[in-house]
Image 1: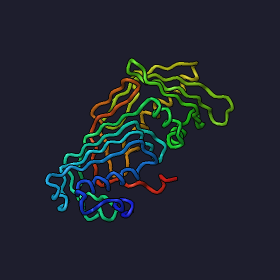
Image 2 (image 1 turned 90 degrees about the horizontal axis):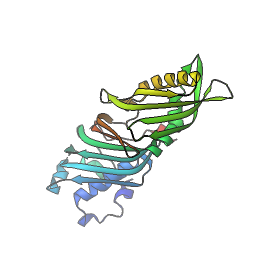
Image 3 (image 1 turned 180 degrees about the horizontal axis):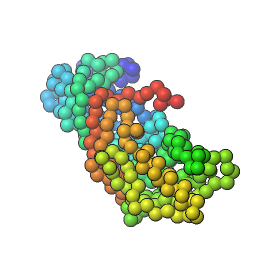
Image 4 (image 1 turned 120 degrees about the vertical axis):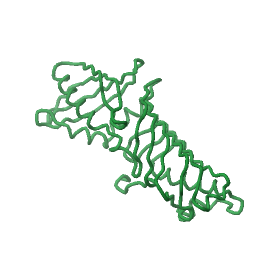
Amino acid sequence: MTSVLFGSLPLPGQGGDQLVSKAVTAAIAALFKRTQKLEATVRAEPVAKLLQGSADGFDFIGQGLLMYSGLRVEAMELYVQAVSIDFGAIFKGQVSLRRPTQATMRIVLSEEDLTASFNTPFLMKKLHQVEYAGQALHFQRTQITLNADKSMRMQSSIRLGDAVDSVDIDITAHLQVENRRKIQFVDVVYGGNPQAVELAQVLTHHLNNLLDLDEFALDGLQLRIDQLRLRNKQLTFYGVAQIDHFPQRKESAAA
């Protein structure tokens, strides 16, 4: 890992901030299966303070991120104001925080990201935990639409238990945040026949319990939302990330 990070760097002329920035970028990239653009920039003035493990902060900007779970993110930005790192760990290809820190964040999910994410085995497995009349619900062909009136529409075909035929459900709702971490469907409108409406009501209740940021955050991160905005076919979260330690990808996520 060390040779990958630093093998091509002209170390004698390489600034310490650039060296650390490269290490942080590589470490963050390892958390994702695929990235379109990824850049972390460490800020330190004077640069020599890095040798003592101090930095004025770092900025992380990523686009087109695909997590190992299959969840997709259009854009993610983290702005850390101050950070204390173990500079020696950098030469081992690691990023180690000496103490927890905090960052402001902006996360953008496109309509396509949401549709793709709701059809991943990761989320479908969580949706299969819901039951109706003692039978499991099996979801397929879920489609998410972000509307001009700032509502979100969710359409899906559901098979009940071992049934061959499916029921098409149609949910339109506004989104709000509770306790800075739980995404809730409110002002819900249901379409379809009575059975479809009843199934959709069961699903809505399950989603309101499921969509908790603590269930989806990377290891070492705690996310809290201060503002949610739905506009131009994008769902954007603004908030704070508490970073207890630098995230590492769990081995089970590699499958």
